[in-house]
Amino acid sequence: MIVAARRFWHPMVVASRFVPLLFGILLVNRCTTPPDSCATGDIECSVLAVLPYSGFGVIVFSTGPITINGDWDCSPLTNNCQDVYDFRISSAVAADSITISVSNITGTSVLRMAVFGPGSTLNATNLINSGLADHRCFGQDVGDSVSISGATGAGLYRIAIGRDWGLSAGSGGLYTLAVSMNAPKLAFIAQTADNAAPELLAASTCP
Image (cartoon, rainbow, N blue to C red; front, top):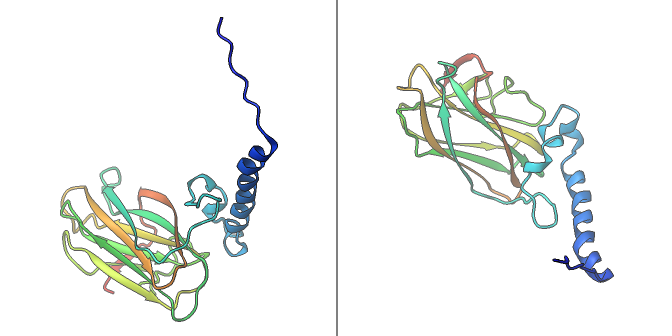
């Protein structure tokens, strides 16, 4: 007969293991329910499991660069498609700037980009060009880098990395996204769209 050993926990051990966890949960709830975004359906309010926490459950802010290897497959749409990545900026002043770079593009793909500020939908003003169109400046397999100065405030920023169906060849490709900031206020939250149809319907522009 095999008897399972019973483990007895000293009260100090219990405290050392579970009090930080409880404290971390409280901090997470405070950090991920900002009034400026939850009121408008901020995805962070329901996707806590994917947030980039430190060991104590706090969102980690940095200058970056935060690098993500992505890919497109526009074949189901036979049209433009985009991936969307959500980032949080903890605070913003006029001197702050965020830089978005896309490189290592493959698949004879033509890049389209858009950035949306706190509380905005994916068909609102693109902060790259202050218009209602994707930013597109170059041809196939050519990367791009843009900087946005004087950020529009703290909160959730959504970055759309798109592929132009009509100007690309084939239906898919790879890319590397790098996002950085001039102050340690940037955190990656989640990828919230994959090969989705863009919501900006106007013809792309440069810038």
